[in-house]
Length: 436
Image (cartoon, rainbow, N blue to C red; front, side, top):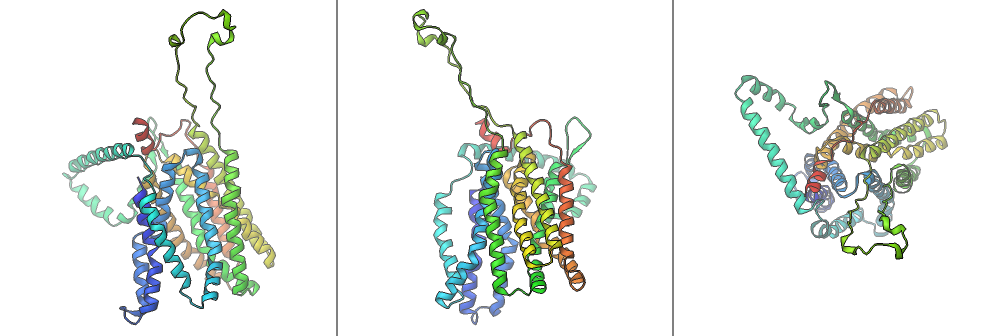
């Protein structure tokens, strides 16, 4: 039930180009002049921006595909994004050179968004059927009613009011409550698996902020200009896109379990000669319905966990290559090798969906987006920026050492995951569909 969320999220992200054109053309008439560009950025940030769009898209895809195909579909989605990231600057440069107008790429972007609007509004279907949405809405209404009753009973105590005032200070972190370890029924232990997966994802996403410092390092160490930087960024983008679109889906298909073959029942009299069969009419024969065997969610989760761990090992090895590089060739090889560690994101997202135990895809990926944003926009820039500023004059490769250390921490955390013996419950949407 995330079709409208996808449309709304992408409309928020795509409004920035129109504002750039408006301010560039009429900067003398808008309040604050070029500072008016900050307004769109602020609104975009408050509404979630690209993180919200990515979360809604992941939730939509999770609802539409089988569990054993989730990581492969996530990989294809990210691969197409990286193709755009790699080709976008080149196409923009060609447009600017041919038209001698810096705003031409923005005109093209706005036109593409306008043409896509009918697709999102009229063609893109809901991720769940009407019956499944009705059942899901009813279940959510019942859950909210139960929580409201519990709140009314708790309000009688003064301790509840004090607790609510304290929690209000951290209400912006409320989406992350889904990742808190839950008690395992029948035991005194807690399930930390989902908490570990999301924490590791946040650590890995913090490395997105390294892009700026990688560029500064290349400029300072190798004397690269904009031309060399453009070639390097394009090569990295295309390599990552090739891995996400071609290599990773192929590996995922090899590792993911396939549905066992369906054995058709054979009637005993089919082995007898036709002349020896009884005269029992065909209508009297019993027909047993055949249900194709399903793929074990536990087996799917094991393959996702394996892909995530191997991807982190590739990241660690790639950072080691970058650290020992003494020239641009080995540095580029290490950066390109990092592209082949991109399978962690899709595999971790699919694994988190498996471990969420019926929390709902929209709620889950929205919370993951919050955690990833904290890592990539707050923690990552602060930590890696502080390290680079203090070591650029003595040991500029310290940021790569820190990045490798963070990935080692994430890999160690992923080694602690122990999948439950019994497959987790289906998510709420699947259960609603099955009940119907």
